[in-house]
Image 1 (tube, helix red, strand yellow):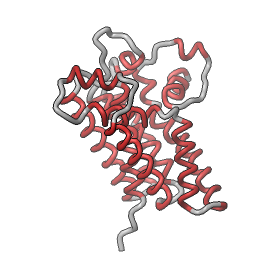
Image 2 (cartoon, one colour):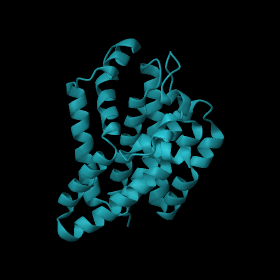
Image 3 (cartoon, rainbow, N blue to C red):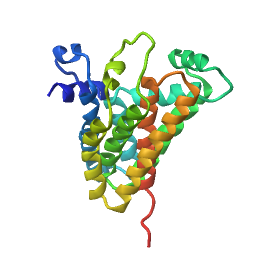
Image 4 (tube, rainbow, N blue to C red):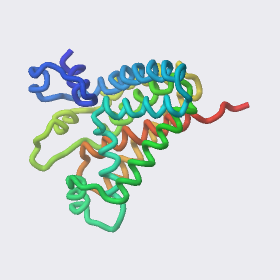
Length: 242
């Protein structure tokens, strides 16, 4: 139960016992990431269904996305914003790492954050009510894929991210893929397409970060979660094929 609670603490603002937080997380903690995403998405889908009974779709989607951000402590959105500031431009990897740690936000970061939220709201308004379940699950599964492809690393060897990805490999990815694959298959060909899109988003972003940064960071993983969620929501909002 400890890995599940550690994953819950990592990805949401919900509190867990201090004894759980005090233990260094291991690779099995990351295996629970998609499950946490599914639970979060299920709650958001239920909220969205209720809001659509009382408000226009866009208002309901806006309120749902607002709670989405609050429930995660905005940490994934923060990662997207920081990466948008750090990754573009002709800079050295060390300069990009310094920008990632800078608490101030630049123009690229503001634009990326605003576009990300707007896309989420617009896509959620147009998508089926169950879509947050798939987006939440696949977003965190994409993070797991990226952590296997490009493990977190700090030169001092410290930080919870270092122990989280230490020893993380194929068997953990396989175990962590069971829930996302099941949910995607239940959604039909659209779900399978979203699963593929999430994997491509994760691997593509991880590869970009590998070329531009000396090491993966929590901001990179957060940006991957946001990117995969947005891709999933946008795909689900497209009209069905005739």
